[in-house]
Length: 262
Image 1 (cartoon, rainbow, N blue to C red):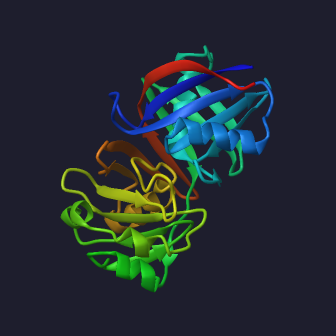
Image 2: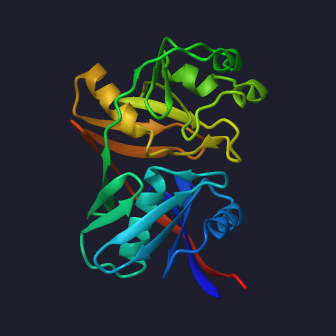
């Protein structure tokens, strides 16, 4: 059977930037083992699968290793695919997901993701994680992900991670966020996942569910501009709305194609 496949670069205004996600529309759900095989074959950080039931759109996110409870860039990519390629007429899309109903609003080529806020709490730095880092954080917090706060952007850019030690840290299903104030933005981050096929995630929308409330409080600002300073660079426009956060950005279509499953 033939399936459509769309590869979208999310949280960027140009191709080869941001975070690539594959988007696969389905008429009905395939078995999970097939979804994982498709995701592994796609070889990007996340593949989003959705089924449009008319009154609601069910959305799921898979890495090559696990199904995620929440993913920002693949949600943005799916909204971009629906709006610019598949002819979705509205300016607001509601997805049914493992994290509940998520709304994406579209305005002037920007996609505004209404996501749950996950304020991180003070935590102890695991010994193996500490040993894996060439620079130690000044503050350690945790929500779904560990949030390691650093003095400045230079430390985030230059840190070295011993993967052999890092992979001994258990954060399933999350990862480790490194963050600091930014030189040319409100805050920067990088995101790494132990034991993952893709070690550094280029742009991690869901990480900003924790970064936005933290930096909003630290900087006394409700609206913030953030950059995820991976090699591909992600640009995120953020707003703290109490128990919700708004994460917005742009997207570009990179490829449209098909694949076949016998």
